Length: 325
Image (cartoon, helix red, strand yellow):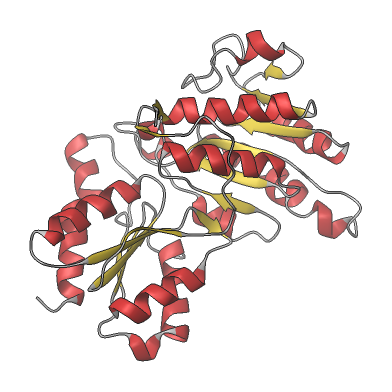
């Protein structure tokens, strides 16, 4: 099977859905003439023209509002944020308009819109450009939140997100756009809301999503050298969360470590921990351990970034702790 980059998988998903449905269009900063800040939309302007690949001013609140209005009127916008850090400028439109319109209109208005772009640390971008807001958006009824970890999942999930009749937050990683993976040429979709076991194991469950899956899988590889069999689950979406997949795994392994690139308070890992203690408490042989960012704004210095973010060593240490080793 062919291997393509993460950005190419996203581009194929965009192009295929724009060919399939003329109501789909892309809008955001530098998506057209510049071919995208991260070259995800490269070539789409030439293929679909300026009415469907639209460059915007630096005004997230404005073009997000235009997107919500377009969705209310039957179009299917894809709104690209250069980084989800900038989505804060438009958070009123996302939460108070897109997420709530179906409920507030008594079911009269679907909002089939996708908000997509990179999330989290991308190296030496400092405090205001390195944040994770997956848990913020996941806290909002009416939104779906998708966080893929590899090119195959990214393409299938983005196509499903574009076809979804509800607003979807689709969060990528700047550090993953060049990652390569196997992606079939034939069309496929991946269901939103289903987790996947990326590696089977018996001794401990490691749950993660997005680019932290690299940490989880690398830790599992190192743990295998020490005869620890780790099962690794990729959530893929954090609203809805596939709780059943986690519970079923924990019932087998009796231990759980969650790896998440976010601040610890009110995080996705906090929610998972609560759910496991409620639905799998009798199966647990150790308390749940979480690996998150340290509870400080992300600094600029690479040495400090390395200390603050989740890493393989911290994950292995957490596994050893729940194994009482």
